[in-house]
Amino acid sequence: MTHLHLLFLALPACGLAVPLGDHPLDDQLVSESALLVHLADALPDAAGVTAGDLVDDKRLEFDQAPDPSALFVAQAAENAALPDLVGDTLELRVLTYNVGLLDRTYFAGGRVAVPHVAERAQVLPERVITDDWDILLLQEIWEWEHVLLFAQAAEQNGYLWYAGTEKAHVEHGLMILVKESLVGGEELQVEVQFDDQRSIEHRPGPNIRRGYLEWGFTLEPTGEPIRLLNTHPQAFVDYWEVRNLQLRQVGLAASEAPADTLVLLGGDLNAGPYYPQDTFGQIDGDPVTGWWRNATAWPLLQHYGGLRDLPGAFSEAQDVVAMDAVPAWSEAYFETPLAGACDEIPENVFSAIDCNGLYFENYAGQEYPARLDFLMWRDGAAQLRVLESQQEYMTPEAVDGAGTVELSDHYGVSARVQIGVGG
Image (cartoon, rainbow, N blue to C red; front, side, top):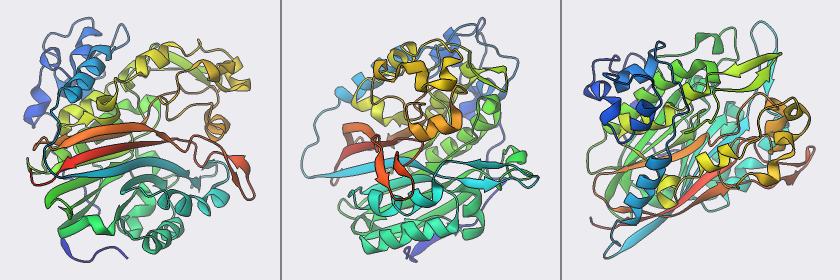
């Protein structure tokens, strides 16, 4: 069972976000922000454009791909320049993973499903939890019956868990698990459903209302406060505005943690940092456009949350190199994963890609491959060092009743971090 010693437990909330335009971070000029300047460079006229404008102003149109290469270099260099920690340290292994347990029908007919949900649900909890992660931030555990499978495996292996309230959980599908030995002090557990939603996802859609979970506690071995956030904002390229508003809301929540609190945020952001072409893919014969606006999500979340990209701190992010290696879209994408170019793409970059068999079954030829799954952090005390980051669960495995398949249609993203004890 989850800890019951709680400082505060918030039920599903709405109306909590600061209205767009009412927060000082909305007024940041894009051209003067290290996180956002590459977006300014891709606008034909960035004079006076603010972060708030990037969130939802449909009048802004990029005339070239926003290229975050310089930011990738700077973030990796910033981490490399940090001095070694002195004294005792604690290492933590953290995983964010969209486990793809989605099989829902629409109110008015139709179905949305990741293949082999029933079979994978019997394997995933034990498989993932026994890999000895310290912190797991999981998405797309939509059904409460699947929450209970993870909960059983968690309790048998020394973990505490938080999935929110049953009623709201089946709408957001999020779950956090932490080794019990790490959790001390008074706990804060918060469940929020975003103010801004694509309402059709709830009705007549498959009963989805997106949001985030937040869990704060004292990190028992260090005595320092930590705050975990897990989120899964709006999907699909056309809905960048809703996604940006949602990420602004969870970003501001992360920024409100006390300055001395370590913040770790994970999730499937449904948007990557870079897309070379604004048009890529095809759905029902129509080209898919608008990818450049999706590239605003990753830096905006960092801007509003005071966060940094954790894998990109370990090693300079390779999204631009990998994306530029993706073949031009053609109808061959419908027949062969990545039009036959899977072996030509740099590994350990894209967490969502047609080279994953489950992803190919769902999205073949419709979407850009991308790094959609992220870990980010904020460390006001400068006591965290990134030791390693990589993708996980990339190799198909034997699953009874499903054959040899990937565990999910996404790959997991992990990090090994070092935290100083006693500041």
